[in-house]
Image (tube, rainbow, N blue to C red; front, side, top):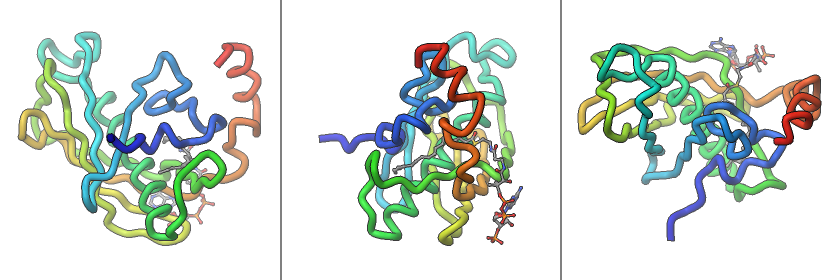
Length: 169
Ligand SMILES: CCCCCCCC/C=C\CCCCCCCC(=O)SCCNC(=O)CCNC(=O)[C@H](O)C(C)(C)COP(=O)(O)OP(=O)(O)OC[C@H]1O[C@@H](n2cnc3c(N)ncnc32)[C@H](O)[C@@H]1OP(=O)(O)O
C-alpha cells in the first residue's frame, strides 16, 4: 500500500497552502513521500502552466521546489526525532529562503519528478536540495532553507483565518 503523502498528514490549520494544501481546491496539491533517504513528488503541469509554448512556467517550478522542500524538512525532522507524523504531532516548517537555478527549458506535457535531499538538519532549520526532472533530465535545481514555523503564522493567528472561513475552505 502506498504511504500517505506528507501533506496529507498536515493538520487542517496548515493545509491551505497554494502549493500543497489538500484543503485548497485552487492549488497544486503537491504530494511528497519518502523514497529511501530522498523524497519524491510527481506533478503534471497543465497547458495553462505555460511559459513559452511547449515549456513550463518558472514560477510553477519554484512553487514545486518550495513545497517539496518544506515538506521534506517536516518529514525529515519527524524521522530524525523518531516522532510519528499525524495531525496531533506536527513539526511545522516555512520557507526562509528559496533559490532556483533553471538549467534548461522544462518541457510541458509529461509528468515532472521532484526529488529532495536533506543537506543539513537541526532542531530549528533544514536545508533541502531539490531537483526537478523531466523525462530523466534535470531541468532545474533548487535549495530551500526551511525554518520551524512561528506561532504567528498559524491559520488561527490572523486575518487569514477569517478569509478561509468566508471562502468555505
Ligand atoms: C511529514 C509529516 C508532516 C507533518 C506535519 C507538518 C506540518 C506542516 C506545517 C506547515 C506546512 C506549511 C505549508 C507549507 C508552506 C509552504 C512554504 C511557504 O510558502 S511558507 C511562506 C513563505 N515564508 C514566510 O512567510 C516566512 C516569513 N519569515 C519568517 O517568518 C521568519 O523570517 C523565519 C521563521 C523564516 C525565520 O525566523 P527568525 O528570523 O526569527 O529566525 P532566525 O533565528 O533569524 O533564523 C533561524 C535560522 O534560519 C536561518 N535563516 C533565516 N532566514 C534565512 C534566509 N533568508 N536565508 C538563509 N538562512 C536563513 C538563520 O540563519 C538561522 O539559522 P541557524 O539556526 O543560525 O543555523
